Image 1: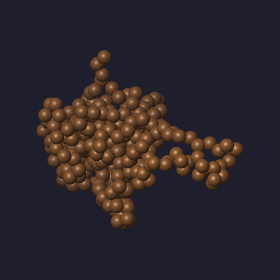
Image 2: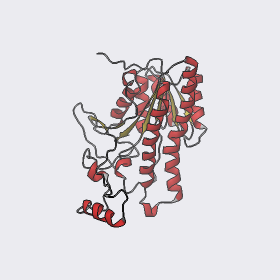
Image 3: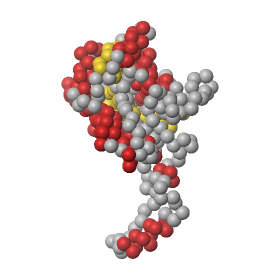
Image 4: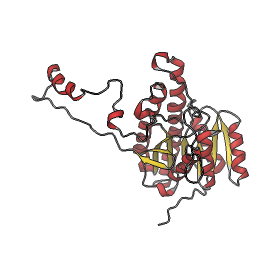
Length: 306
């Protein structure tokens, strides 16, 4: 079976696309034939547009902060007005304000949650309005793909990133809501948890190569997977969370119940809770999260950022 991987005639919006993962995602989508709206805060967006055009693609830059709720409408309008449609949304923009919880300031929290979580929500909301209206006008489902950028930090609770971890957990929940709420209109929404060496993460990941000579943490590897999720071949994939890096794509399972405690007479007393629950946790280290025991780690780094 030959899967349909072409994005010819489609239009994609990629946020945070001036460098790093976003740039590679924008280039990957353009390479598959998509027109691309390249969003970032500064002139780097224009540089990526020039790169896409030099390779024979079509793109336009829209500078601005996705943490501004109105930027969602601006990006959707740019796609529709310039290229005639919006088919793919890749939410990637983010910032870091890494602090331990006891050192976290209000601005550290607000900046990260605003750009990551609010930024995802703002553009997703505007895209949802567009796709819902388009579906009603067409009398049936339309083509829509959303790829959101989460992180394994939402699972493991990175100790020095309480703001980032919380925002990424919110993005996963937003993705599931998007998939559930927009599926009837033809929209497919998924989240990726990438590991890639970019300017944001160069101090985290050591260099390494794998067969083919490409850096094992090259962001291009993530761009390839995003290009796949954006394609018609991914029609049946929605509401899923993937970890992607190196030579691997891992589909994460939904949370499961590890153990159920049941009151003998229908209502727990404090004493019975102590009798049932306390022994169950004997031998565990209290500073380790549930994920350390119930989620199989993909390797021993325990760290993921984008």
